[in-house]
Each structure stands twice: as C-alpha cells, then as structure tokens.
Length: 77
Image (cartoon, rainbow, N blue to C red; front, top):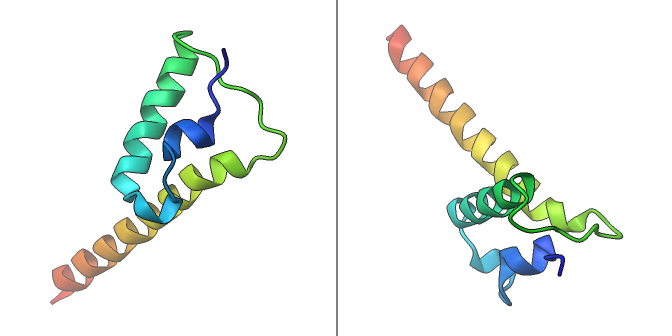
C-alpha cells in the first residue's frame, strides 16, 4: 500500500501543530524510506502534500539567513 506523504507526515494533526524540526525529520524519514524502497508513496493529484515540507524548509532557510546576517554584523564590529 502506498503511503500518503501528507497524511503520514501530519498523522491526523493540523500542520500548525507540528514544529519545523518535526516536519523536517519525518519528511526525511519518509523520503529516505521511499528512496531505499522500504515503502512507496502515492502520487498526489496535487502537490500540496509537499507544501508542508517546502514551507518548513523556507522557514529554516530564513532562520539561517538571519543568523548569518547577525554573525556577519557582529564580525564587522
């Protein structure tokens, strides 16, 4: 049986109830399992299933960019 990426990731919860760390970790597990052939993922009709992961990645990139900017600013002082 194919796993539904979004449903497996959310596990019955609203996406707002998951931390970015939890989204990234569970996404990594699901995608690594899919790549290694441990399980199959159903092909979504819409790619909104992957929007959860992309949103967490975008927020993480923004967070890292802010940290880099802060470090660069402190290094110039």
